[in-house]
Length: 212
Length: 273
Image 1 (tube, helix red, strand yellow):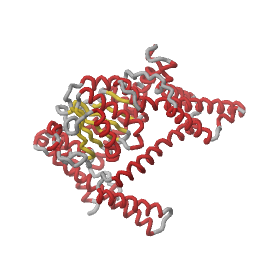
Image 2: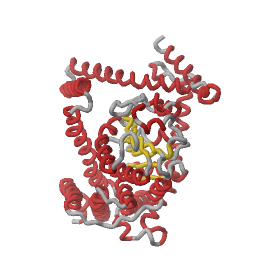
Image 3: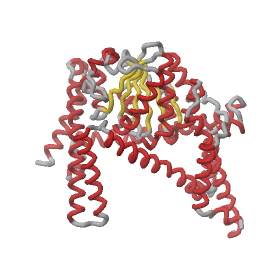
Image 4: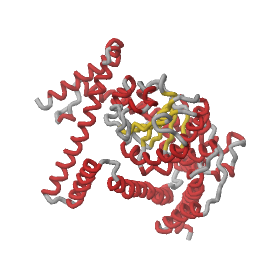
């Protein structure tokens, strides 16, 4: 029952959504807006489910004293502490705002900024001209890097032949890059569509804990 | 001896990166920046083509980690819109993005002399993902819960009376500043009829060029360079222009070390052959 009901609900909803989007009379009746309102409410409910799930998972880790269980304690303290602070004082209060501006913003900026160091180290150690393909990739990468900074314009001006370094970098991004990117996307979407169809028809049931 | 070039200590690399990033910020070089005709100019021209009173939607879909690249774009585009008399509705698909940029946008609006409720409104983050935006397509107030980021009812905000639907008749453009998902995909998929302009973090640009080529995006600002170019176009050089020197030196350093590493690699291979 726990597996069949979700499977039936999925199929029924898929049919309803298909009809609502395809049939104009249903659209005129405001059916899509009603369904979207339901989705909006479910999205909000999902937030609470996320909190509940996170709490349950980390309480289990703490109870069983698994490795690094102290971090789970910290996670729950921070999550509930910050949530309560926002609920009691409001999310525009000085203290609540301070935690965000003085901790979350600089920490997340620092984490992202540190990538620059690893990129330099990674590029230095991994970009080796081992074969022709690697050489082509390296030339393109160096070209695009130079074209994206003012020094590229000084080497070969955009007013020059072929639009300079920037013109060729734009061509690389627009033509070969776009062609490959589209091919990957088309493949991905075909895969996603076939998976959706399998779920809608009840063929794919592994996400419900049943065999395919 | 040459082989050693392929194995320089990481600490030296990190120190040089830090110096390349810090020195130009402390003492800017001021390198000239050209404007990208394929990316930045179409974006600028589109905003230029808007009429006074047109409404655009700013979608803030990034978090603090991408502040350096995207916030200068938000400010520059906001300034351009203000100069043209274009009204701005600020919204966002990332809760953290709107919370983080709220005060920045408010300060910029104040600097530009924009009146809240008449020239711009920040409707804040709305939960529910794409379903929420699709609901706003036909019932904007209902989808947006009828209240702005400060919990002020839309009834009290004159600009919001003009915004009943999220469609091409109401909005002249959607300007999405994004560093990931959800982001421009929402607009490309569900709102193809509204012209879309985007500000992207540099790492995403390659995957978005195809949308520019097909016309699904009318313009694209690429990373900090895009922001710096836009600052030049509107004639207000700001933080992105100042940071371009640091980016230039960092790029040159990466290239230098790639070349150095390869010299060491080739030398080592010859020796072993």
